[in-house]
Amino acid sequence: MRIMALADDLERSAQAAQAHGAVTGVLAAELLDRTRVYLCAFEPGDWLALGDDGQPLTSRTAVHDAAALSALCEAAEELSPDPAAVFPPPRVATNAYLDALGAAARRFEHEHGVLGPSPFGAALESAFPGVEAVAEQVLARHLTRLA
Image 1 (cartoon, one colour):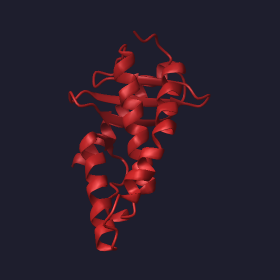
Image 2 (image 1 turned 90 degrees about the horizontal axis):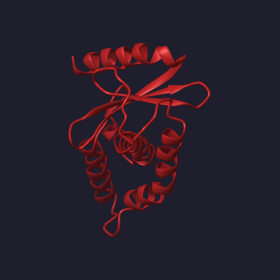
Image 3 (image 1 turned 180 degrees about the vertical axis):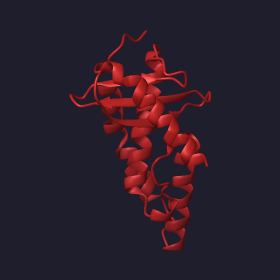
Image 4 (image 1 turned 30 degrees about the vertical axis):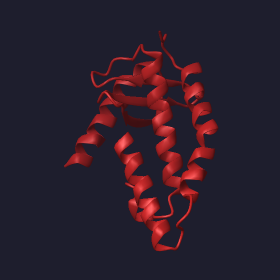
């Protein structure tokens, strides 16, 4: 049921964004204040962030945070040593999901004898510059004005 509702939300967001061009994908993120953001991608590398109401967001901070959270969750999924911990698409990028991936990675590491610093944590930390670059690209290529 939850996946179907999310799939419907993603489809609704894609349809709302069609006024700006051909949508190639939609990512969902939920910020700490529970604001849901739909990041719509377009073929030439442009982006449009929509709220639950289907309207473009105007907050530069909200768009940045949603893009960074989405990129960080994708990096964590790619680095996860425990594929069973990765939630299959469609999924919402949340801090809770990121925490769950980290906890699952740490359990996996302990089960395999890694007792010191977490290799997953170190790898994820090294992904931060790339995550920030993605967020900056979304801001730079956003189709509407951000304040």
